[in-house]
Image 1: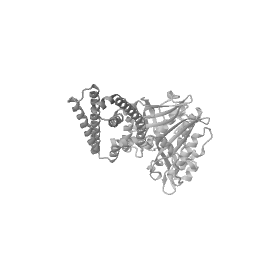
Image 2: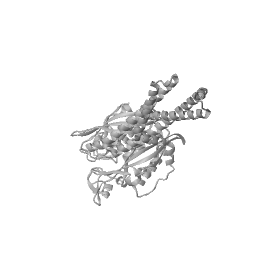
Image 3: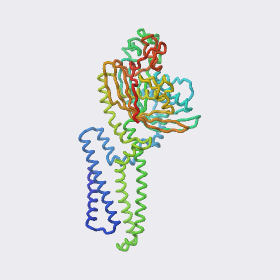
Image 4: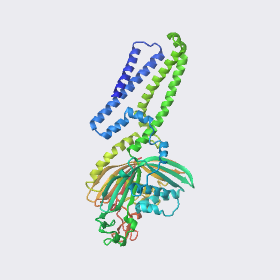
Length: 546
């Protein structure tokens, strides 16, 4: 209500100034122009304050959502002014301070398992040699480890290494890091989330070339052998009920042999993605950063203008008013303060509401657009709705695991160096795109969303929109580019598994040899076609929108 009252007062002042002009109280052209400008500023600012607040109140009443009310309060004039002066979480100085904080260590907690993985992940990419990293092997599934190898090979081919420093900044910590737990036909699946500060430091021959500091949400999918009773488990290959000991010797039903580590908890997916809060923090950081500079420059112009004006008008003012120099100084200071405040508030509202949202669409690669902010704000509810719809047909479907799996497939596609790798997760031949991303060293999705889902008697189909931010290395320099993809994915209607832990998943129906899903579309022994869509979501088509 205070915002509406303030707006009404400003409009009243502006109208009073216009009334004074109409009555002919001013004769000098400069006085008339100045009075008209300031009266219009008061009226425009007042109207914008009232209209903005009225719209916020109507939106709050129509939804009654506590979350929306919180967003409205955050985006109100009071919230925007408060956030303008508060340090942003995306401020690099604040992010760097996070690395000085010690992370708690508790070997029995899931959080420590994730922390250990991030430590081994850093060591894996920091070492440019070709030696095996035993630690990362114990933490990850074989397919996920192969995808990590694709990126490491890309860095190695370019003569680079990447030290990825991470710190957990979630207030919830381990007790709430577990967001979902469910079982599919083969595995126990656990989904964890952590808010991380990430600093990617790229080096060449020990010399730091570039570092990228950002905050994102880390999504983990952890799989474990599905337990049946106290002693029996589900065979990850064929789904038969057996014992762990039998799987080590070879499943009695499908013959697949497993190692001990194949039957332990493994991270099958790990992905960093932007959510609404991290995107909003980044958006606010750049908006306030540029706005502060503009306001300071404009206030400096106002101060200079009134100083020159007071100096030139001093003799006339002193002669007409009969006052002394102190009154001239006081009047000038009062005019400067009032004008500066009005101009600053007007500029703050106009720039925040109109100018920056437009500029951000064409801004630098680090600037998140208002359009993306709005999409990410609505994404959780949309994902929940589409997930509920898909689970009518695929009862174990998880949007989080789906997006993480898709992100890993995109990474394997971008980091591919040969025909086998680029077609690993595709039913379409993608050889035409081989080499297109040969200089990309990192992939960061800004948004992923399922736009359409359908199912027939044979297959499930999903249309997905993806906004990517790509880090490219060329001639000892790093640059970033953004792309939008529209992807069509397909999976068998009978396939109810959500993850594929190991590449040796089934036997060839023609010769009985174990199938390596990383070998492409044909059995390595007899050449028979491998139907990848029988085991997981695979790429049917990719369209590059921009």
